Amino acid sequence: MLFEQITGFEDLKQTLTQAISRGQVAHAQLFVGAEGTPVLPLALAYATYLNCQNRQPQDACGVCASCQKYAKLVHPDLHLVFPVAGTAKITKDVTSEKFLADFRRFVAEQPYGNMQDWASFFGAENKQLNIGVEESRNIVRVLSLKAYESPYKVLIIWLPELMNMQASNAILKILEEPPEKTLFLLASNSREKLMATILSRTQIVGVRPFDNDEIAVYLEQKAGASHTQAQQLAALSEGSMQRALRLLNEPTSDHFVAFRDWVRLCYGRRIQQVVEQTDEFQKLGREGQKSFFLYALHLVREALVWRLAGDALIRLPEAEAEFIRNFSPFVADDNVQEMVRLLSDACFHIERNAAAKIVYLDTSLKMMGCLEAVKQRKE
Image (tube, rainbow, N blue to C red; front, side, top):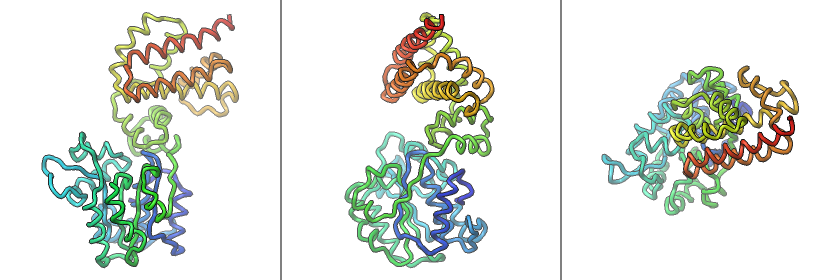
């Protein structure tokens, strides 16, 4: 993994490469950010740069023997630890080493994948993944060996928050006093779930969510999305590249058309048609249903922005921009908070597996009330 393969984050990349160039390499670093942020890609790119035989100012060369091996995750001085669970084929001594080939393919295909994606990838969908104490013993054993080829031995632990207490305690000593030229890189999605004794022994590297422009660029240039599709999915992704890619691969309907038609039904108080639409909404599935309400929330906010600033701050495809211009008069000071609340509540209830038809109908009736108040004033 090279830094150039990670869209955006130029300031953080520069901070990391300059620290290595100055020889300021903390022996234990925690890359931490929300799910869908590039914590693992950044850790891999950092390790690649550290051991590159021909470093460039901003990135590893990508062609030396070390870079080539890091790209395939087969470098002998790179050790990978990640959560696992037993499968039909592997029932004993369940450690990362047994699943290393699967994990290499997973990272190559889904560098922004989450724990659920990984579990599905290696056939443990209904299992509870963790990093057990046997893994910690392996860590102590492999790090006691000398480096084979590179200046640094690197251990990357993906999702260290899934280490059980015994496993965490077992690595505390080597984490605090590692062998010379040994680097720990932890890539976490939840700082709060890590033991305080782990946190106190690491240097924190905070990783923000992707912004919408970064996600849209990635989807358009590397994932084959159209410009309009990339913009829509970026708005729904909540800063998560993993979520954006998952939505891209789902056979969902056009979010804009669905929202436009829904608003028209609510504006016209066409209750019978809304009731009929509940079956179609049910078919979207939980992710599609949540995406619909997130997109609705996004366009309500864009309509408010247009009311305040006109076209200057609107970056939407023309069809959506034209709709926003017509819809914005109905996003008024006295109802916008209610609109945001009811759409946010709808997302909340869908996430917690509430009955989709009831959520859709209830939200539609409340949206009718929001629009009716403005409609009456205009008349």
